[in-house]
Length: 285
Ligand code: AMP
Image (cartoon, rainbow, N blue to C red; front, side, top):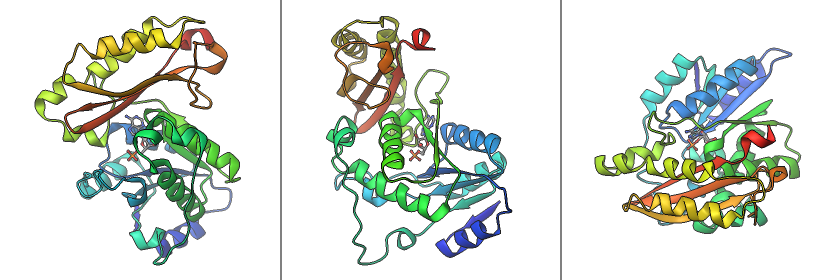
């Protein structure tokens, strides 16, 4: 596996790829876990070459968020990627992506202002900026994203569509711990007691999801979710909503043609957990 620690090295790698190659690209912020591994495995199965980036992107963090304490585990990340059969890992410096005096900013509207965008103003602007730059630097055939960050997949699909970025977006199902907790780099912030409480988020999604039927009011699902989450008093709900699986816009009722998804974010102490559950999957195939 090649470690490309500058844009120059990435360019050289890119230019040396053989004619007819396909390149699967997995952007990450490191502190890799089984969720990232699943993205790499999909990319490995579908492409002749696999490139993973590790970059803790400052522009997607708010001023009071966890940029400086975001977990960084470079040696373990490289060992895992080697084991997974990635061909190359790109570890740019901030200057490789953000030149001094940079003037480029992306300001997204609509979907990116809802839910995560409402709780984290500017978050998706930063995600869109770094992903646009990374796609332009790496020229991948396919871009691999996790369902875990459902709204991000909607925002980035729309970005790719609107900005005519020549890449195919592939969304990979959420990888969970055996107790249901979605794998996340931020899970390591949880205290032992919080870790014990954490699976209630997915249990609450699942129990609300069991009540889903075509035509049911979304409010009934959200209420069922909130009641189940409240069984674990350590949780503080940020938001829960039933949204369209295509646009992430709120749905008043569970209309199968909109592929409804129950999305939620909740705090355990200072750690914010994010999860979602596609609803009515048995009725929409
Ligand atoms: P991050 O390093 O948190 O920015 O995540 C990099 C990519 O991995 C994003 O596309 C995430 O949605 C994806 N990802 C993170 N956690 C999981 C998970 N538990 N299952 C599947 N994909 C995930």
